[in-house]
Amino acid sequence: MNTPHQLNDDLRKKIAVQIRKETTPRHVPDLILEVPDIPHQEWEDY
Image (cartoon, rainbow, N blue to C red; front, top):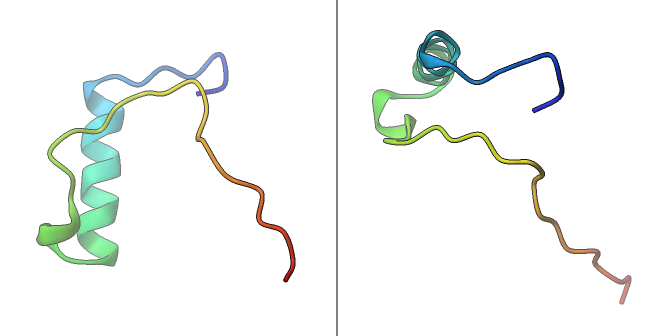
């Protein structure tokens, strides 16, 4: 996460509530973790 943001229990709850509202309770993950970066792969055009 970007500073000065911090993943705490309140933010985890807000994220879970938002996911539940926009999808279904089944889509809410058991764990919501903070990571330094989201890995991605560059795809070449074929």
